[in-house]
Amino acid sequence: MRDKPILIVGGGPAGLSAAHAVVASGRQAVLVDKADRLGGAPILQGYAKLVPSHEWAKDAIGAMVRRVEQNKSVTVYTGAQVQSFTGDPGAFTATLKDGTRIAADAAILATGFTHFDSLNKPEWGFGTYPDVVTTVQVEQMISSGKGIRCPSDGRVPERVAILLCVGSRDRQIGREWCSKICCTVSANMAMEIRELSPQTNVYIYYMDIRTFGLYEGEFYWKSQEEARVKYIKARIAEVTSDGKRLVVKGEDTLVKRPITIPFDMVVHAIGMDPNVDNMTLASVFGVKLSGYGYIEKAAAYVTTGQTSRPGVYVAGAAAGPETIDDSIAQGQAAAIAALSLAGVGVAEAAE
Image 1 (cartoon, rainbow, N blue to C red):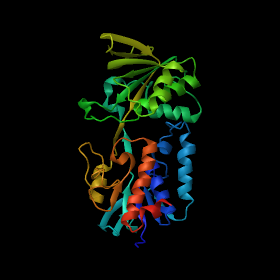
Image 2 (image 1 turned 135 degrees about the vertical axis):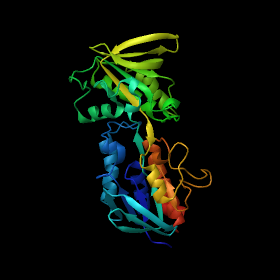
Image 3 (image 1 turned 180 degrees about the horizontal axis):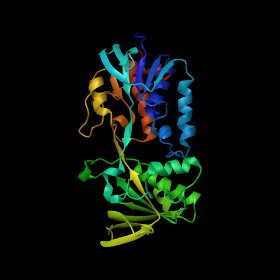
Image 4 (image 1 turned 90 degrees about the vertical axis):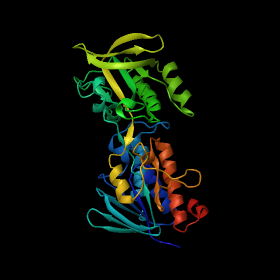
């Protein structure tokens, strides 16, 4: 039986789950993250309540962080990056930028994603008008406990527009993929805004609604029937200002006519981009990227999270847009696959 640790790169939900699964099997894990603390986007970006559990990110993901940090079988390197990765399954060597060398049986890439930068969609007002914000900024407002406020002057908005598919399903800017979770997150956010500020009316502009799986009733219908969120099927042309309020201009695609509606705040529901470091990661770890720039998986039906390089696995949003719940599941699955490769049976690893 091999006894070197499993190397995990990325300390978000997928990486934390993988680390826990490895040490639960009785093996050692080494967790490397370029940020100065663990938790990934939910912690670093200050997410509020998570979908679908409605738990606060600081509590749910924070508990995963503490579980790993308090386990003596996990060696954690924060503020660190892998500079080289050589060898073969069972005999890999990772070298960090500070020269630290790590021997590993296998590696799991749980390096996550990068939020779409709304500056790449300038016609929709971000970067021009301070009250055009992103879903991440609204998450931060909610998690701060200060409520929803217009950044320009601190007032509570009377009317908020959430624009879906900003940086998703948009060939003009090279984002052809659906980011999978934005519709559900936006419906949940709309309900949170209404709960915090009942006097605020919330409108969601959409091309299609993709509250997939079991999320339809709890988020899409509930947001309309209980929270009175209004949905407008539209194609947005631009977001401007009349000097007092923001103005969303576009076409109502149901009735085929132009619409112009003033708002106090406009929220971009930003999608998931590939991690900005993916080209570097692909070079260091010797793995292939998909045509979209995510880490490519091998055949899904005969392997679990295997990349193009034997002994190197991928989990979570590093391989494409993903939910937190599924990222956690994939982290555990990748750990079991890595342990199986390293000489621990699946049944033993799952115990």
